[in-house]
Length: 636
Image 1 (cartoon, rainbow, N blue to C red):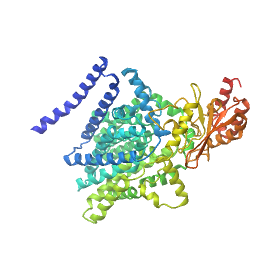
Image 2: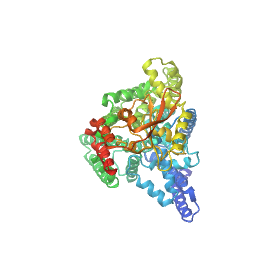
Image 3: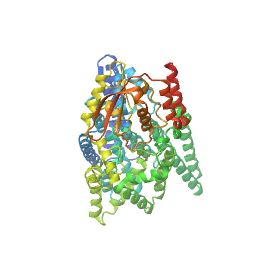
Image 4: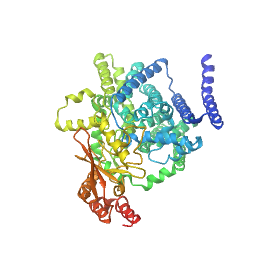
């Protein structure tokens, strides 16, 4: 009796409490009682809502957590949080490029909310059509508000705002798959599966570098939970609503998750259709008709609603040639991507996913295995038609990897009576190996730090040198020295232009070295280095100082346009610039500052146009049109 009465009351109390707390927050804000606390309190409410909705989706999928599951999830969370914190605090990393975008977005969101709740909410909504939205900022604000507001603070805030809900969703998927796979050793499977999947370095890598894109995996896991065994045999409006809104939220998290969405729903539709054909062959035409009706109704309605809700995004996708403008990131196509993903799975997880796929096939779960592999294959093929994946974009493959990892964990757990100590040793070694892996921008194979000391190949040593320079910088003081010089020597309305644009050194290195302080925000121009993405930097013609470096920083860049810009500058500098100062970075790189002494001329602009003739032929709107427009505006 207590079970049937108390649980429904508790379930009803949770949405009531959430609704009441939101009303109270709005009333207090209207009365002027929240002040600067509205945004963090609203963020806390959003985090609580998402956590409860995730639990609701898990229950809707027929999953019930026991005390054992909760204990394991708490233990895994604590281990991950401790290891993550130690890794972040033990390095000296400057957040540049994409690794600083979300921290800067968080600052902008906070500044918007300083103008009032409505101004802040409008800011969040108005960014939803941009490549980098402020959607995640809503959920990360509460812990970030309580922090020191540094780049590391933003990274660590994800331990509060993202990781708990993500682990709960992963735990729900593990229990669900355990039911579908009919795992005998359920507890062993849950322990091994969740701990291994959660410790996978690729899962944590983007987060450790300031890219909270793993937030989207919460919604991807909800989609899996609600669809993995749902075939529209019965009407389930709440489930369908959950699928729709989880998909919409996944799109808002990062636009490239659409590749997973397209691949997954294509395979899902084929699965439902194949099941309907089988039912017809078995003489159950009515049930097949119900399935098809449900699939078509939900699918068509969802697509129409998505197009209406996200029309600006859809319009941009249809009119913007990503494959053309992102060609600089396509560094090897499909063959390279397959090799890259094999390396990202690494020596510990590649055998696990292969073992899981083979085990599931032999255990009679061929359909689920084929569906998972098909989703991964379609996702990779579609994505590589545009570009190759970085570590953060590889997250769109994580739902498929999770399923295969959990299958591998099931194979280990159900066969522990044979070679028990060998399998337990593999599990513990994989955890230790993964949790101690270096999570840096140049990581290809995630290896523990201590192993880098034993790699002696000259080509790899250079890679490791650059990786170490970026991941654990020894030149922080030198970076600050040059940044202070720029700040001191550029007055109001004056600025400097820096030519290097690599991971080792770029404008962001000097602008973001002391976040949240940004004294160079208006004194150092944005960089130029990606073909097809960055417009020609006419700031070079207006800057008081131009800064370059010798040797010119190169760090596995995706294009050489920055180096070409540097070569042309050096060819012209004696005519237009004078030497001003030099800064030795202590690692072989010397920065040199040149002061403009002759105003820019049409001849100077034409020299750059000639240097970039090939690039201009491909992207005139980024080169000749920009340069000619600038010249016209300045009477040249």
